[in-house]
View 1 (cartoon, one colour):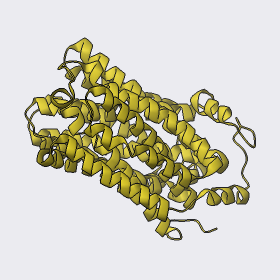
View 2 (cartoon, helix red, strand yellow):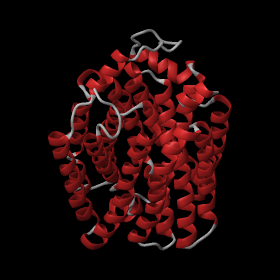
View 3 (cartoon, rainbow, N blue to C red):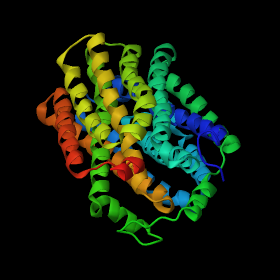
Amino acid sequence: MNYGLRANLGQVLQQLLQVLLVGMTIGMMRNVVPALAESEFGVPRGSFMLLVAFVAAFGFVKGAMNFMAGRLAERIGRRRVLILGWLVALPIPLLIRFAPSWSWIVAATLLLGVNQGLTWSMTQTAKLDLTRADQRGLVIGLNEFSGYLGVALAGIVTGYAAARLGPRAGLLWFGLIVIGAATLLAWLAVAETLPWARAEVDARASEPHAGLGAAPGTAEVFALMSWRDRRLVALCQAGLVEKFVDALVWVFWPVYLHQRGLSLPGIGWIVGVYGFSWGGAQFLTGPLSDRLGRHRLNVGGMWLCALGVALLPLGSGAAWWSGAAALTGLGMAMLYPNLSAAVADIAEPHWRASAIGIYRFWRDLGYGIGALGLGAAAALGGRIEAAFGFVVLAMLLSGAWLWRWGEETHPGLRRAA
């Protein structure tokens, strides 16, 4: 079988289109829903823990589905898991449209967590199956660029759709079009990539990881990544904590900006700057890690995110908020594809999908843990700004942990060293 971006360009482009639609699906929940939680869905003002409930539910469900998706993909194939993820998403727009209370939004977000855990994991895993080891940074950068471009576009489009059609009708039609198109394309145009992964195992004469047998089970890989290999532990905790930033952007940025008088389209543009900066910069940061290595970019990204989050509430006006959002997005672009690439560097082909699934389990669990932490910080502090401080401190400490326990994982750079 042929490996590489050029040899498999058609399928790589199909997978990039899939992850763009995956990003648009989550993006439709990140602007209108939190900004109008009080007026449209009945969340009392100042009920911070109730407000974060839907993101916490999303994080715990998506984390669990990431864990399951990796192992399931090694048994039944990537394409079937992808299609299953889209089928689960079909009721989401209807739940939003007819929601009589916030509990329906939480239920819709539970389905969204299942959808994202299955679909986003598969788009990344499939592209890693098709491409070479020296292209991992580029491949994951392209994957995350497409996904977060979709998130940013959806935030802007749904802001205008809600202003023109009403929040419920705007989200209904946007969601039906995106999810319907994605399901149809996954069924008709996406190929199964599991044979590429199996052929790589057969062709590659590699030593098993020192902590694993030749055919490791799920429990073995989970233990290795969660406490036995300190490099993988450092990567997993960094992935978990960086989701505190995205939980803050999802839950409290729209509320914070709405309270300061911004319209829904205005909020969509500022949150969109974060998404565009995150997505667009990965064109550079993914390939850059294939040249310079992953470790310094990962640690620097954690600390740059902390700076961007700290700056946003310290000023006012669209220009200031957009600048802070761009800085935060750039930090995410430095770390996001390269934490995943570092995990892929360490994992062997026959347990790579499981390793990626377990990393994504810990990473997206950060939505749940981070959302609860944000709600608690805001409730104890009595104001939203306390949640910003919680995230800044967490990112600084997590970056220090990654610097101390992590190391360079790029295969070529490790051999040169």
